Structures are given as structure tokens and as C-alpha cells.
Length: 360
Image (spheres, rainbow, N blue to C red):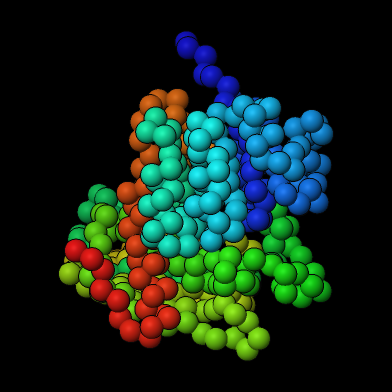
């Protein structure tokens, strides 16, 4: 039996707290060596150094030194949303495969620049954590099998109490810590791609595109709130009109509770309607609920825990690289780009207070 290669992985830029989750997946993978981490603010790396027992010679403040000295095969990037293009352009020339934490980018133009920056023989993956939720994968399997016919509508509600309530591995912070961080956090700065729309809308639009077989809408209409004292939104509602029907995506910072601990109302997740039935798949549930013409009464279908290589993004990326096969689903560029196209239209719609038509 051929022995699998060991993949050298580095984590660069700790703007997004999801870096902690992604480094843990790398640390726990049997075929990964975590060779380095880098951030311009050393204090942000201390938690990772402690948790993963990283020697100091693998910790860098300069990303170039990190890349040149550790020579990784794969780099995980977690910059602020508006800096994804900048960081891909910085790191791509080093000939590494890249995993960029969601969202894809702050604009479609930036997303396309990221795609162009990658060498032809290297993979760019946009990680959407909801792809690794068992209920959503089960929902996609049922949709693909034709259980509810052709998909006509998707409703998504996504969010949490707010991005500053959680550290690495979802470690909870106090209200005092949140209040202290808010004035300086990139999540609340418009120029850095802050706001609930850019943070969460891509989940709904990208997974909806997955559920709808890659179909694009004709036009998008978006409305955002304007919280006093803030320059970014904390709540958005977006309607996309397709040739086959309407879909709605709602983002919310400030849900009553965090869905991975206790589902708020409305529940975070997806409802999908098709020509032959409906299904609901909520974040982190161990079941989905299905209605069909043959069985109109809603029935729960249990969801089994995910198996390798579909348990987390690091596992899946290395599986595809080991076998030389393309990425599929929301993390693929084909689906992620359409999701970004909808987000881009929503941003323009919210700013202009008008419906935005997508190019043919």
C-alpha cells in the first residue's frame, strides 16, 4: 500500500478567529506537519503557539520569512474580508496551494483577481464552514437524488450573537471584552469589509447555488439596517429572483443565542422548496425534515456523522490534492464565484437602494 505524503502547512494572517479552528484541523491530521504561522501582530498567535505547542522558530511576524524558511505546500489565509485579494497576490507567487477562509472576497472584481493570481497547477479553495455540517450535506444528497424534485426556492437565515463573542475554537468572550474590542475590530470597519452582509451572506448565496445546481439569479434586491454609531450593518435581507422563482437570504449579528450552542429563533439554516416537496436543514442538527407528495406529513430523517474525507476543510483539500481531483461543492471556485456574484450585487443594491440586474 502506497504511503500518503506528508503535507507541510502554514497559517498566515490571523485577522479572522477561524484561523484557530483551521490550524486545529491541520494539527490533528495524521499526514500534516504544521511548519509555521505568521501574523503582523504577534500577540494574536500566542493562543495557537500554546495550543499546538509550536516551537518559537516556527512563529514569524514577517510572512515572507515564514514562507521562505518553512517552505509549506499549503497555506491557510484568514485576512480581513477586504484584504483577501491582497494576501492571495502576496502568497500565490510562492507556488503553494491556498485555502482562504470565507468570504470569497469583498467584491467580484477582487475574487476574479484572486483566481488570476494563482499558478495554473495550484489549487485555490474558499472554505465555507457550513459545507462540513452533516445536516447540510445530507440535504444536498437528498436534493441531488431528486427527493423534492427541481429546486424552486431557498430560504437561508444565518448569523450569531456577533463576531467578537468568539475566539479560536469558539471560546466565548465576555460582554466587557466585546465592548472593548468593537471600536478597533476590522469586523466593524467598512473599509476592511466588515458588516453582517459580507460576513454571512456568502454562506446563503454559495450553499444555495450548490442546492440549485449552479444556477444564477437574474436580479438581486438587498436592504440593510443602519445601527446608530456603527459604519457597517448588523442585519441584512436579500431577495434573489431566478428564472424559476425567488430565494431569500438573511444575515444577522445579534441573534438571541449562538446556533452551535442553542438555536435561536428564527433557526439558523436552510429551507428548500422543490416541485415535489420541501426540506429543512438547520445548522448542527442531527436530522433534517422532509415533506413530499407521497408523504405530505413532515418526517424527520436522521443524519449520520460525517466520514472522512468530508469532515473538515483540511481533510477534504488534502484528499483532493492527494488524488489530483478537483474540488466540488461550495468550496469550489465555480460555486463560490456565483455566490460572490450575488453578494456583489447585494452590496450594490443596498448602497443604491435599487434592484441590481446580473450580467447575462
